[in-house]
Length: 131
Image 1 (cartoon, rainbow, N blue to C red):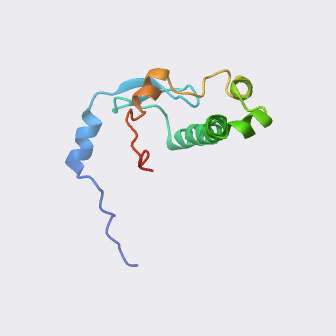
Image 2 (image 1 turned 180 degrees about the vertical axis):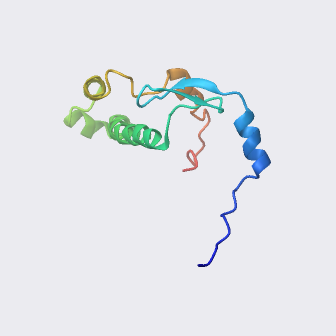
Image 3 (image 1 turned 90 degrees about the vertical axis):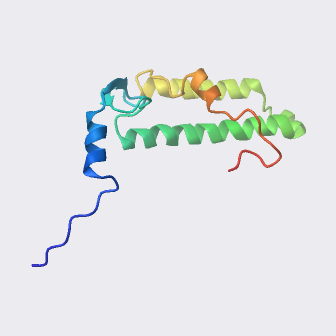
């Protein structure tokens, strides 16, 4: 039987011990509302699966809203013809909230407005946001 060396860690043992020694903060998972601890200052999820589920839901909903808002702003004739306006966008948001109430025990599926605003670059140039 051939013995293979243990895989090298990306961090040294000393670095891992230093992280483990940091004080833990209490959080509630945005996806399942379960309390958890983390050494990170801004942890949001108890596990990677919950982070992925949260972000996938936001990506799908965000893409739907993005298409409607962009059509409303830049294809006004078509938007009027298809009745794309704030009423439709608000109905869609209400449907999202109804789904949250039914499937997520009423937990919100959006970040706090302060966090959302802080994450928006305030100055997009002609190049866009770099994505």
